[in-house]
Image 1 (cartoon, rainbow, N blue to C red):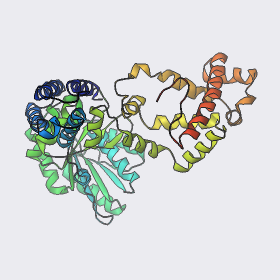
Image 2 (cartoon, rainbow, N blue to C red):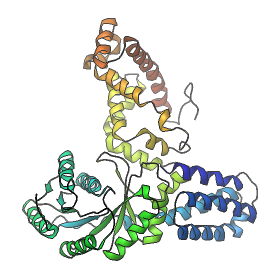
Image 3 (tube, helix red, strand yellow):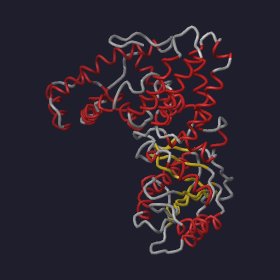
Image 4 (tube, rainbow, N blue to C red):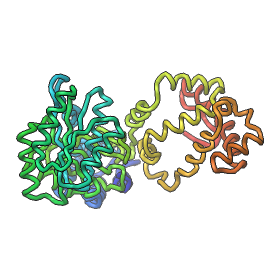
Length: 446
């Protein structure tokens, strides 16, 4: 995600970093390189011009040219400009407008076919459920044949009710009946999956206008595909002019997106980017933070998001207990299996590495041996609880049984146990060292 843009922008900083003083020529060279990076990322031309002009104007000020560290000062200017172009610094501008529990909140999901609208509706519903809301998914996309069924399946997976009417022709009537259902079942939020077509046309807009008049939504969220580049911003502008938007959800943000959509949307539409879809799982749905995305683009990482992801899947009490086990070298194979599964819940390893400062672009998807991780989980899952609690009892007969059960070899089982024993010693050092800073671990440097 944003890897190519990040690499090109950070490369542009070579013109200004490491120098005791910088000239206007240095700044112009750096900004020109950034301009080319933005254009290659499919950022809207008008947005690029604004970005370049405002950056040059500020960077050529006396504050930068005479700064103690002009290179770092220039990077800060670029960072702040990226944040302002990605969105408002005030997080309340990106927060959903949710009514109290006694009044139903209506959210209208808009978008073209293939943008991920139906999936995003389910992801949003799950997020609201985790926040204590009681959402209902209303199947009002009566054009795409599979939309109703897809929403029903997704609702079943995340435990959220779906209101649908098979054979219905009038989306307004479906919503009205969904509203009656919501009141009867103490629902506080209705997320309406609306009609989508392959392209914007008058028929779709007319239907959405009628639905909007009836629903009187608190939020009108456009779901746009980040892989479409700056055309996503053009689509958003059209929807805003015809229907009116309160925000945008950008899907496929974990893909090889060039960043054009994210950087163009706010400037072109004036509407905040509120959420991003970062994977296929219902949990892969994140609030959009301009400062964090700017940090990733500039190779600064996003440790805050990484910690938040970890907090979602790792219980604080369990984490403290785990640290105590690591200190006393009581960490077991059962604990290892638990940690492997927790990491899987956090999303792709590639996306997590990108959040660590300096790691973006250093390790590719191919470098991550997913097959090995699956193999480790299979071996651990093939052990009994007693074996995972005490690996010392796993002799040759047990290793043979575990190998057969996991579809691996005895040598691979033995290798995993040996790796675990080595890891336990390293973890003990890490647990003790974390109290006063990261320790030096053989084979690794920090």
